[in-house]
Image (cartoon, rainbow, N blue to C red; front, side, top):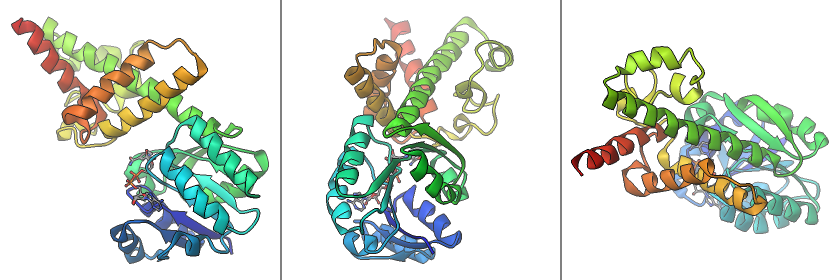
Length: 299
Ligand code: NAD
């Protein structure tokens, strides 16, 4: 039986480890937080009190950690403790450069490595319906596909090392920028006397159609399941959008790509997350646009 060490049992990693256990893998979980260990154990995941113990003898080591620095730091101990040829999968959302650095560390230590960030949020992690964007070799991807399928529904091999992270930040840059555009359009419609539903009925069936409008609509009403209908409870939190756009901004800078919209979207969501928006769904940006528009009215 394939044995898997799962490092990082937080909002995402906890339910992902549970799904692997349910699929019949021999999973050993580890987290620095005792509460995360207890929660995973209560849901049937075997847990260990040290990282080294968790990876001892594992065929696959999955990390699901907050940011690149956590992954690179954790790899120091994990790579040394694992048996030769272990496949390391990092599913955290981190910079492309950090993913490639982690890959190089794993290879230098005699292991194999895939970057495999996800989308689908906590709901997708619990339901086993995550989308995985995978970077790494054809061989490592083919060997680990059943493991991804135990946690997700749509698994895309995006190319070599770092390209899973590249696909993730490119997609989320489109999402952040289109959500700002859709929100500005609704506030402009309000000022011009246009009903939300009328704008929706036109744009949802015209060239303004996009996921930010037709699935995550930032005004209540037209799409009953969107977070706007429940006071912008996430969903996908503003803090996570700010983080992902920051990674896109970092990549724009390191590659020298001329970006105006992506860089501006990053600045707008950083400001949103530093204000009241960190814990709101990212579509709550419409409230920020309205507030700033009122200030201009008064001036
Ligand atoms: P989280 O903060 O809930 O979980 C991270 C866990 O890692 C924590 O429990 C923390 O204690 C643990 N940890 C940190 N350093 C560790 C170490 N060295 N060893 C062991 N455990 C360690 O975060 P999350 O929401 O689960 O997100 C994890 C990753 O997934 C992030 O990179 C995030 O950007 C990405 N992501 C999150 C979502 C979401 O909706 N939450 C969606 C897509 C992607």
